[in-house]
Image (cartoon, rainbow, N blue to C red; front, side, top):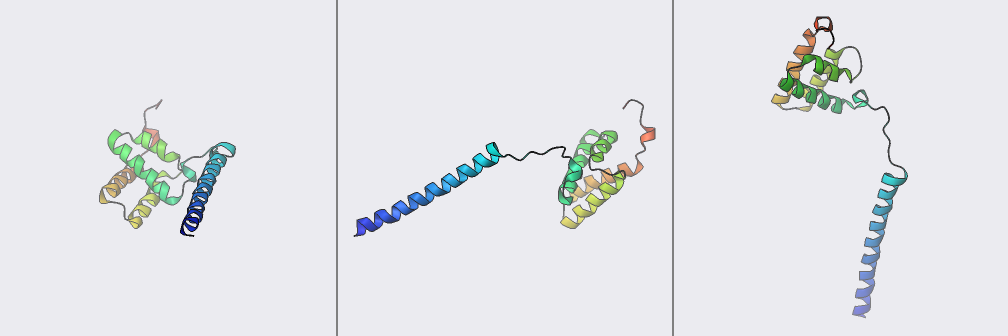
Length: 127
């Protein structure tokens, strides 16, 4: 009786494992081949607030490396809205509330101060 009981238990584990693998396989097939998610016309302005703050942080890091304010403003323009300093300020407030590191906050503050003084009329023509 011990061998029969052992074989029954083992076959249950085998069937269970096969069912799990079949479910994963069918889920991947459906999600990747049959009906994959398609993102159309997405941009940073559709991000949640936490991801917008991360985006502003990435722009801040790029600005600190490139020192190109016009390029940073173009990147920030993807967040939508006409008030770029307000977008950066909102991200900065969120970053402070969420406990971003002091280095990250310093980068964001530097960018915020720069965009407050940015005037597109003073940029050279053709850029």
